Amino acid sequence: MFKEEKANAKTFLVFIDVYSLKEKQLIDDAEREFFDLVESSGADIVGTTSHKQSKPSISHFINKGKLEELFNSVHGSDIGLVIVNHKLSASQARNLELKLKVRVIDKTELILDIFATRATTHIGKLQVELAQLNHLSTRLIRGWTHLERQKGGIGLRGPGETQLETDRRLIGHRIRTLKSRLTKAHKQKQLNSYARKKSRNRLVALVGYTNAGKTTLFNKLTKSSQYAADKLFATLDSVTRRNVDPELGPILFSDTVGFISDLPTELIESFKATLDELQSADLLLHVTDCSDPDHDQKINEVDNILKSLGLEKITQIRINNKCDLVGLRDPETRKLNDEVWISAEKNLGIEHLREKINLELFNGVYKGWVSIEASLGKLRSDLYGMGCIVKEESSGSGIIYLKIDIGRDELDRLLVNKGFNICSDEDILLLNEA
Ligand SMILES: Nc1nc2c(ncn2[C@@H]2O[C@H](COP(=O)(O)OP(=O)(O)OP(=O)(O)O)[C@@H](O)[C@H]2O)c(=O)[nH]1
Ligand SMILES: [Mg+2]
Image (tube, rainbow, N blue to C red; front, side):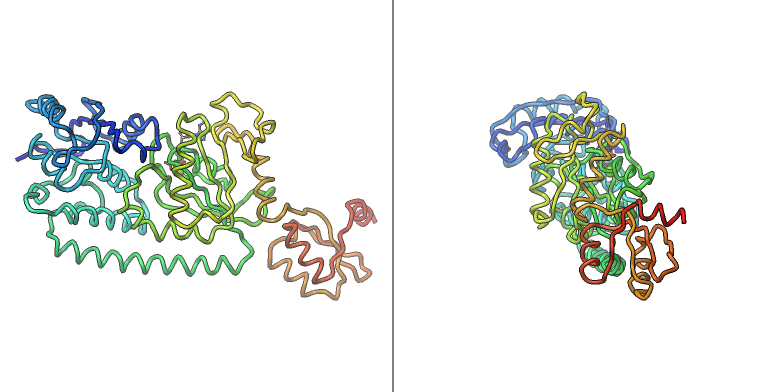
């Protein structure tokens, strides 16, 4: 029925600006984002069309006149795939395919496909397959026979691929298996996070719109080399790393999947457990691209998604990243509304961000000497257990001097409860010289 389709099929894009959906459309430049998305999927774009219509047509989404034009563009060409920038109902997608005689996918399938090609971890792959199957099960309607004969191609790649030939019953079975595997995998992760809670590590999660620069900043903060790239959804699987920066207190940083407007509900459902991990974060770094013309809308979009995940109560530091692109060379001077201006790539403003993180989490950090009575061995071993002793000196007169690196809050708690004395650096210098 359809032309043979390969993974890099010649692709035609249809961008429709629908007035009646406009209020929901928070992104002004949705067209550019749509193109970026399609490019991220690796499609071979050979043509595009863009038009406005007042509302979607019930049968084909695209109105009749435009549909004829589209048919003329596609018919007799070597185009094998049409991608539409909206969510299509099962029957709209089917009717479009019947009319155009090529495969048609919508924005949801496009995003699912990108996720499928990016998933690398066990949990990531399970989540994407679950999302694909959930979506596929809504498409298994009468008359939708071509799915059984097709393999590969954008929208059909990834872990779910072989399942596309199975029927609804098999899909249902597979969905149940995936869900139970995911529950098991997440239980394991929860055990790990329980271990974290027992330690004094704070969890700081980087969140934000896709391509804002979260991974670039994460790499800077944790001296890691996670994959960061100028494409949408470069990161899919969350990664947590311990802070190695001596300027920061004991922190675990977590890099997460980026958000996008109209994130398919199937994906939110599947990724819920991963995103649920954010619930235990002590602080969110909301990374934004301040050079993006849609900067404000994207902030709203991310805040809305955070709200829908019940994360709005967690303290947020708003970070305007890529300040080098707006000509801001000295971000320290720009401290509007308590926001932080940085360039993760050019290493600008990171120092101020560090201070801010320390201040939020630990009410600042104390680095210096304290003295305790030698008889308070338990306190000393607790401090070693917490990993905050940098150096130790003994006066030989029943007093131990400890150089510590500790959050102000914790220090205050320990001072009140356990009997510390803060020394001045001069005292210690004398001690060292003696
Ligand atoms: N000019 C400039 N580019 C930056 C800066 N930070 C990140 N980038 C670039 O922006 C692109 C996206 O960066 P990533 O760190 O992958 O963004 P992300 O938010 O992790 O994106 P996803 O994982 O796709 O959600 C990359 O090409 C980076 O090199 C910056 O401060 N200035
Ligand atoms: Mg990333």
